[in-house]
Amino acid sequence: MGEPHVVTLRATRDGDLDALFLIEQDPVAVRMAAFTPPDPSDRAAFDAHWRRLLGDPGVDARTVRADGEVVGSVARWFNDGTAEITYWIDRAHWRRGIATRAMRLFLDALDEHPVRARVAADNAGSIAVLEKLGFEHIGTETGFANAREADVEERVYRLA
Image (cartoon, rainbow, N blue to C red):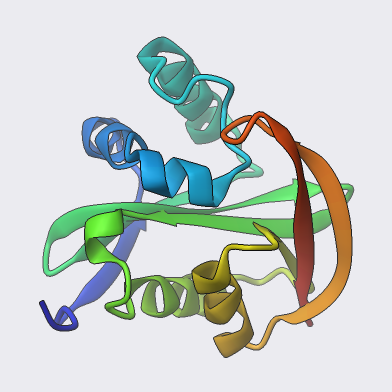
C-alpha cells in the first residue's frame, strides 16, 4: 500500500460521523492517542461531542480524505486564546504520509499563529509528524489519559 495520490480536507459533515466513529474504535490507535473520551465506544457521547464541535464557530473541524475515502479528521480550537490542533488518522492508513499532508494543508489555511499541539510522549509517529511540520517541543505536562487509565506524560509543541 503506497502513498495516496490525493489527500484532501473538507468541512466535517454529519454524513462523515459514521466513518469517523469507526476509525476511532481501533484499540491500538486509542491507546496511542491516550487522551480520549472515557468510553470511546459510546456513540451517543461521540455524537454529542461532534454536535458541540460543529456548532461552535471557534472550532474548525475538517474530514481528511485520501483518494476520496474518509480516513480521519483534523481540528483547531482555542485554549486560553491560543490555537490548538489535533488530528486522527485511521490506523489502516498510518505510515503513508497522510497525516503530514493533511496537517500541512490544514496549517496552510490557518490564520492563527502560534499554534499548539499536544501528544503522548511515547507516540513517536505523531511526534515525527509535528516535527516534520516545524513544531518545536516547548514543554512537558502530565495528565490522566482515559485510554490508559493512568497519568501519562504529554509533550507540548508550538508552531510560530
